[in-house]
Length: 147
Length: 405
Image (cartoon, rainbow over all chains, first blue to last red; front, side, top):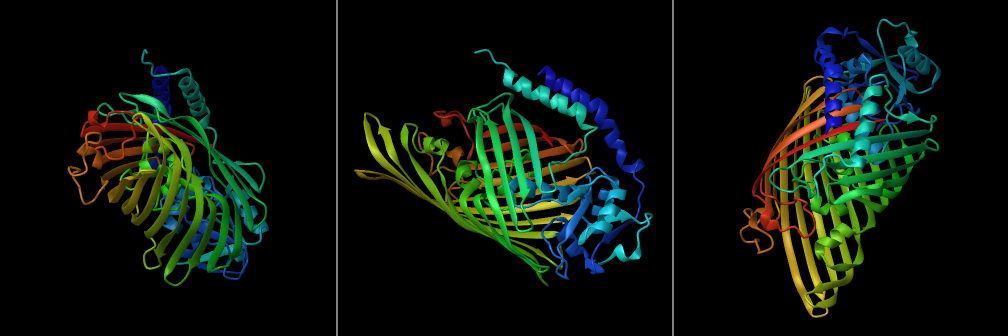
């Protein structure tokens, strides 16, 4: 029993206070733009959701889609979910975990930084990802979303 | 025996969790990518149950004897072929003690993947898609609370709802109406010793379930925040062996025929997720001996729940659920079904559950829920427990700490 109390104490002392205040003060909202390495120049929110839940596997031009994602604790991932997918990050993560632990699919490939995301998009045919709009990238990689 | 909260095995688990917590703030991995093609995932789940009124899986008053260890591997051979498997170790109160099982083990062949549809099949042991939560019923992080809603994901039929060894065909269509997903499957699995014990406490024998069914999921284009699902599972089993009746040991055959249907609707409204599911189960079970049929039960069970989840912020979610389950929907108070062995309150269960989840970081979460229940249908007690000792109105507190890596 003692161990459990130590564990709870640890969690409460170190992790809880930062999380209760984290929401409002530490996140700087940044517009997120979609980037892709394909001849397709626009997609719908619906297609984007299907791509990020890894159900839709081909672009409309027949090219295989390679989905890249930032780690779930990255604020840009959170903003991407809310702004572009109009989904809570929890919901998307639950879809991925369900796939992983029922053997029915594989979640997107995780990249460790915006720089890596940009590099992967520019070097991988069929790639899709997202970056904040203050990061420069050639126009040809920008993907429009039709609402 | 002196009651101890921490057995030596528990201590090891608790210490591991403590160590994991200490390092988890600096580790941000979701899974281990061995290569581009091979990924390993695992989680450990330590539960705590306090059931002061009735034994819950044989446990009362506070027990840590609820634990899951899950390890899986996923290997993409190429764009069209994927191998996937998962091993499970479960401890569930007095009912399962650190039991290993292969949760699924399959090879997935994608036959076609186009911009408007994907289709293929999976061979091997497949999880059964039934309703919104069944295939991931043992996966703590995908459940809305500590357990899947008990009114619709019957624990007493756990065996036949879990998985089948066979084939699962899938077809996903992206068309002008929405996203339409179909899974159809057929296969078989052995009936577990635990289920055989329920037929008769003194029984030697074996049998298999033959299962087939389908699940259809639809997300309309006009509102992608709504999901509809309908699933059907048809399962039959024949179990043959010997059972003791007083001084006699007789060859017996247990036949079970069950058809399970579930309809589900889930609506996500920004920070809220509303879910309702309704299940009907038609079951016929007979017991045959050389002297003829000794039992024939033909009943329709019914269950449903309404659930609201509030996604408060990125670290906290809250849950409220009301559910009802009737073993025989023609006898909702259980009075006609009651026998000396099975009291009336064992034929229905209604409950209100409130709870929450704290996503401490992307690897670690703490979930807790409290349920106030009326009726004990579906409760899992230890073998030979006198059900007349169960209280009709009871309280249950459940919590779990989950670490995924």
